[in-house]
Image (cartoon, rainbow, N blue to C red; front, side):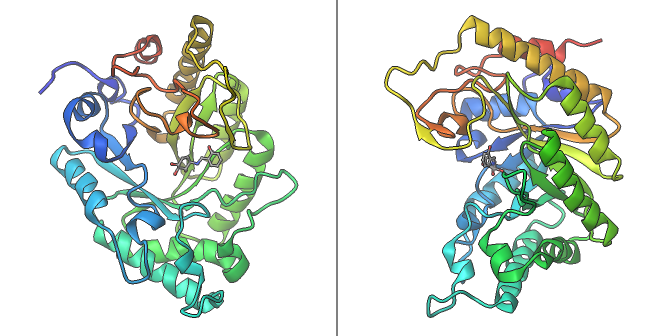
Amino acid sequence: QDNTKGLKDYYQEFFPIGVAVNGRSLAGQEAHLLLQEFNSITPENAMKMEVIHPRKLEYNWALADSIVAFAQKNRLRVRGHTLLWHEQVPDWFFLDDQGAPVTKDTLLKRLKDHITTVVGRYKGKVYAWDVLNEVIDDNPKQFLRQSKWLEIAGEEILAKAFEYAHEVDPDALLFYNDYNSERPEKRERIYRLVKKLVDDGVPIHGIGLQGHWSIFEPSTSDLEQAIERYASLGLQLHFTELDVSVYPWEKERRRKRPGEIDALTPALEEKQIAQYEMIFSVFRKYKSHITSVTFWNLSDRYSWLDHYPVQGRKNYPLLFDRNLERKKAYYKVVDFK
Ligand SMILES: Oc1ccccc1CN[C@@H]1C=C[C@@H](O)[C@H](O)[C@H]1O
């Protein structure tokens, strides 16, 4: 057992420090670093609908089971991700045996079966679930994202997802999860949705703020105002998918342009160090509202941002480099009075 203090030890008086995991994370060098630094994990993909329930009558438990078993063995918290999302959901959910769109009742029954089966299997092992992921539209003039879920079943499916999960595991903490949640225009729309769920008595316990940030955003004031606004709903806050991209946010996906520079220059790293220092200073300030902080991926060796939004452009968003060594930003995150 490595006796080096890790992020989880520096932050034990504040909140658990988590990381998104995939098959690679559970053995060898990556597992060693994970166990040294973190005390919470989120399956990056293993519990998404297209992975765990690829066909109507087929569940695929192997990877999710191995991740949960790893957590049990190492006494790590597990955040379940995610029960209703417009991405990484298989088409079969929305089609009847003749290939026509299903009715509202059929879709609600299928969602209930899915949630009951998945949440039921990990009852007592997964303490928190991202029940809804990203249902607020990207267009500031719209409210809810138009998806097949909403098209077929209407808004009530949102509350139902929470009710189905709560019915099968009343002890699980249930979250609404989204990104760009610090941008004032999106903050107010997330607030409006969550406030309605709370006012309607829906079993929701927290808000998941993904934290897919960059060296350009959020500002300190946007981050603090968002935390205060969401906390005013009386819910706990999880930062669920933290990374700090060294490039500005791009909405449209694209391929890397020939000759496009994707190096971590000293100038970019200095900006990233300052941003991580600000972020964790604010997190510590609001520790009474924040009950988990999870990074999305372990190290710069692999980040989902190497493929999104720009396919093939290397990113360097995390606290550990490609050799799994602590970056300068790490020391600014752990070195506080
Ligand atoms: O950054 C974004 C830009 C557009 C849409 C979604 C996102 C964030 N979407 C997240 C990122 C990676 C996935 O693995 C997570 O499940 C998802 O919650």
